[in-house]
Image (cartoon, rainbow, N blue to C red; front, side, top):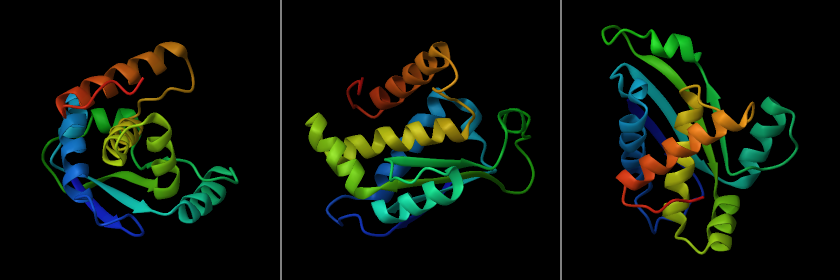
Amino acid sequence: MNLDIDIDGWPPSSDWPDLAERAAEAAQQVAPELANQRLTASLLFTLDEDVHTLNREWRSKDTATNVLSFPMLTREELLGLAPEGGPEMLGDLALAYETCAREAAEKGIPLADHAAHLIVHGLLHLAGHDHVHSDEEADAMERLEIKALAIMGLSDPY
């Protein structure tokens, strides 16, 4: 999977593109359907204000959130995607800086660790995994996140 990364408003103290690539590689190891070389996903590191606007316009929720995911393929389309062919857009992710920084501080973890978790979480959403409809789905998604973060050398966020 290829990532198209845009950074607007996040501090330059970390190598966000490298973190995003490592998180995507870990997500692909636990969710092999993401490992298709045809796939592209966009990842926007931005400010709460921008995520708030996106959340209001696309989800009718008038608040910022830590990560938003906008899938472009259904799970069935992703699972049926042949390895050969032209590029396919998996979807878009947006991470809100102030919310992510606040949550990381509340958890007592580095911002980069929390951002890695949210990137993995968002990519799993783009792959059709969810945590809203049932406890079983939520547990399965959490297990994938924990495995991906362990691959990156990060601890269980739950």
